[in-house]
Length: 83
Image 1: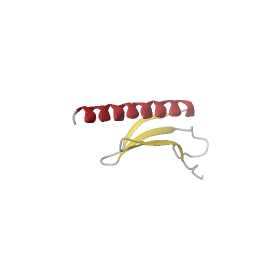
Image 2 (image 1 turned 180 degrees about the vertical axis):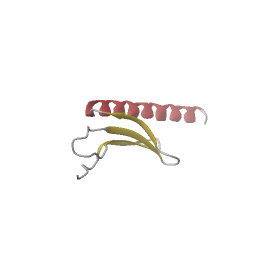
Image 3 (image 1 turned 135 degrees about the vertical axis):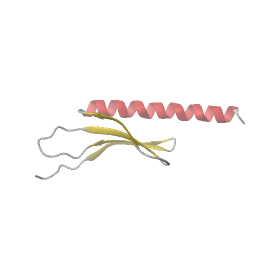
Image 4 (image 1 turned 180 degrees about the horizontal axis):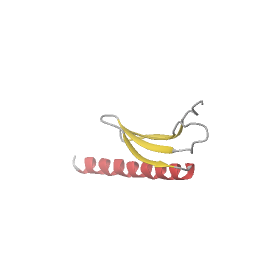
């Protein structure tokens, strides 16, 4: 049996972190599984969640991107106020 390769679904880089959502490799007949991971530039990657449909994968990926963008804005405000 030949493995069906995985593929990138979404990718963003925010605040020194790569947020990646992929369709995982699978065997023919297996269900499709998607996974979102965060890859910091320093340190270990972390699996955030797994999903069985692409809609939920996109929804969670986008929510995580918004969260990281808000965190980045807050850090900039704090840095500005501390100068």
